[in-house]
Image 1 (cartoon, protein in one colour):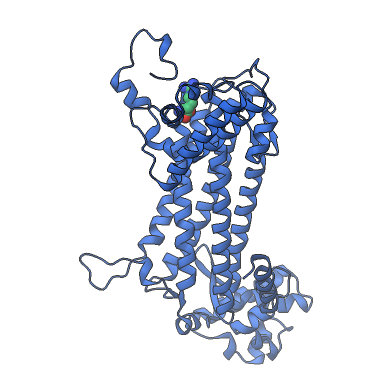
Image 2: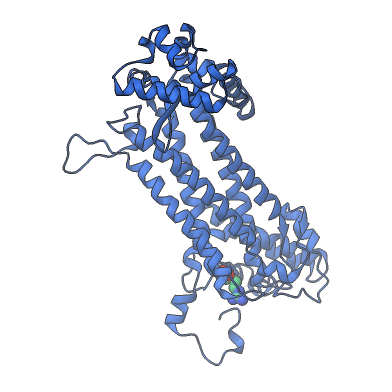
Length: 457
Ligand code: ARG
């Protein structure tokens, strides 16, 4: 018999059951459903809505179910429509008629929100921890390669030189914001919906704050209608995971480009690459490509929830059941991506000799030469013109700025002295950067130390 079977003239169609049953995916909520139910039934007993001994008996049965779920020995019955009815049916086997009192003063509409919030609170906290692990791996990689200077790009055209560590710490900043967003979402969702019942609350003398306290929520939700309708917390989680995925897709893309034969800046460990079935020489960065690809999944799941909830009338509608596969998939994908990137940065090797060959091009230092002139009172505009002309003529005639005589230099600007040639090397270029947040090696080292402290590296 279904929860709602008594009012029905006949049973549901088998295809309707297949189409509507959610146990195939909401079984993941089993432990949260049990935890919520133990808190609920304990409160029912303490408020005198059911007797204390009966409440204890039900709670006991639920703990037995919880143990089985934890051990992985609980048998989910595919003929029970969802996780709530599965646990209810098992409880009935364990404690008999008392089980029929568990669902007093609640509904599946508030229960499913409780389960989903407990799931999010747990899983998103794990994700925050895993992000910190990736940050640690990046900081260690940066520290290990602190002496490496690389070309940096705009428009994927060589632009200026930077410390590899500086580039790496950009990733750490991105991930720190991801953690911040998740913390915000976790804080906002931390309200307990159970006891909102179908949508209007209950005439029974329940104490919702007791349930909140038992489950570790700082408070109960304030409005029963909002409680059962709200899926903002899932949308926020999916948005945060989508942004995080976007960050990893950008890191993955850097790795894909940097590991090409043409760039050859880094070697991705064999354990994260695959070969070709026809070309024996290949070592392909498939895992990075799949990270880039799965970002589409993360965006799609966010979109799914936004579309699912658009113009949906208050309060609960069955459409909302479909939030689950989207959330579960995104959480699992992100967990995998984070694990893989921890391995990536723990094992990534820099081809220092190759990289060193790529940073000798004088074009990397044109902005430094402009700054030289600006420091001598030349306007930005004039400095740009002077250096532009000089670079053009050098390129046109296959010359190097380093080989120009003092007289040649003076033709471009009287402010030039021989010392300008000291700027034409990557070490000076990074060292001469002085602004806060720049690639100056002392500043980057300070940043590394700051992150080491913050992340307990
Ligand atoms: N399986 C449902 C869901 O995931 C649980 C709530 C069902 N409520 C209802 N009135 N049919 O949303």
